[in-house]
Image 1 (cartoon, rainbow, N blue to C red):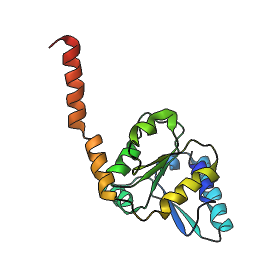
Image 2 (image 1 turned 180 degrees about the vertical axis):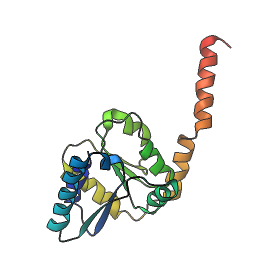
Image 3 (image 1 turned 45 degrees about the vertical axis):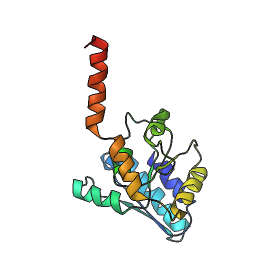
Image 4 (image 1 turned 120 degrees about the vertical axis):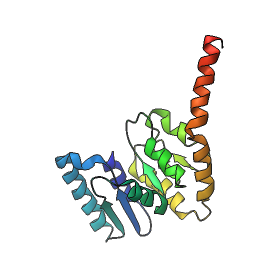
Length: 171
């Protein structure tokens, strides 16, 4: 659903650089279509919206830098088993704006300061929420990261599963 995000970029306020990272390069025809759409948005906004695509694969160090230096992470996947990239963005303290993806995003974005789930199929509506978050000056990235690290800590999650299994088998 990268097209949706690029279309949303048309409605962003101010000068914004949108960086897309992901496996879109594997589909050459689709990627060509995305590049044309990105160029259209950049042209129609007189260069105010700059759209970039990263290298095909990012090293953990490059991905870490990307997460930690962005102002916002937006996510518009139409199908997602578990929003790992959303959890990663939160761990780095990036607020997240996302489509609901069958409700999974509401499980990941439980604190109002961590971002927002936007129920829409309209790029302009999505962009309005993004604009609101980009204009915020009181985002506490440390608090977002702290909450995410507690929420996505594998040890308590694993212990919770083990305890539940013990309860089920009566031990």
